[in-house]
Image (tube, rainbow over all chains, first blue to last red):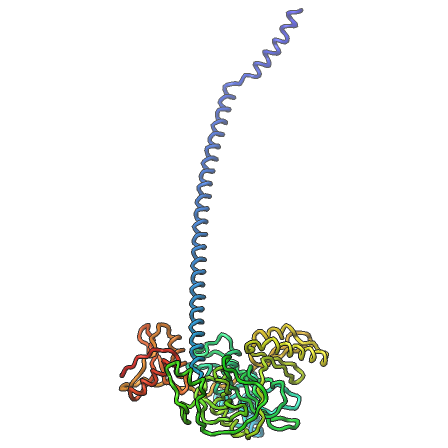
Length: 107
Length: 449
């Protein structure tokens, strides 16, 4: 009776252990899944790399565009400054001429 | 108007017959109609009609009143604003003289316009409207700040006023203010050079004789009215472009054509009052106007206080509010002609009256001509400039000297040469070079073509 009582838990344990062992098919499936995951990871890494490169390129282009815009703005400011300077010089010249004229109108 | 109605009736008949399918070809009637329309402006009695009916009438320059006005007893505002389009070669001093205005008022009324080289086609405001100074309306009144003389005639309800622009004394030698009278008049006066002026000229290397006889070199011009305040005169000038400037030694200068009329119409003993009123208030047709001129040194605040009190009084008496924002703007801008400062009935800002348009005359009165370039003549090379406008400006200034020095610009490549001349002989060219040196500090070079 004691032996019988010992055998029953052992049988249970065996059954559980046998249930826990993977079959060959399971193993292959697992390996395939692992490979697929690895491939996906690689792809994701590549995509990420490409996206990063694209982003870097976009940033580069954006920076170039900003630089161009800034240069254009600088040129516009410079043009404006030169125009204002020319206007100032022209006004000064006109004023000087008027002053000389007024002086010449005295007796 | 009868002939006009006859034309009009004839026109209607033509149109009627065209509509009613006349046996005559339509082209015939269209031709007649076209001829009729084109002929209308040619009719002498149609010109007035055209001016009245066109949305923007344009007046010939000689129809614009510049000097003689009649005012009702209570009126303070004379004349009306006008506008003209500039033509190539015009200068503001030429426009000013043609319309008997001083260069100060034309310049203030048109800020930002080049005096000497304005753009052709530019519209110029002619400030031919004035507020009478706040003085008794008797004899001659001269307002220094406005650089304008008023000559009152008559004492009744309607007053005849003749007004002329003037040139006045500099800040160093200002025109004296106060009451005086015309002590004597002289046609073709001799100028006895005052010691102070003789000294100035001696310092400049241009010694003057003790007396300058009548002629083109006499700065008094052809007419002189001597004031009771000794050594001061109202006179003409050999420098017409100086009218509207503070350029005299205390005398009052007028354009030669204006002083001639004043001379004829002013008897000896006529009272003269000289005032300095940069801010003038007047009323016309129930509207209050303010005229502001740049005040002479240190005279602005005191004058402004007086005018401020006057405006407050007007506001209180009339019971209608003034546009104080506009008052401030008029004073700050000092454009030299009357602007409305009353508030509109709806409380909005009152706009100035639309200036009437004036045709450009064929020739501006007194405008110095640009001389033709001739060979076998003497010239003075006054300057060589890279900027064409600078060269044109200098040539215009030289032409507007008194007496006028002929001058033009000769362009070759990017060089613009300002030449004074032509002169028949070397001596005349030398005299011109001397005047350029003394008056404009230009070192001219003589040459013969």
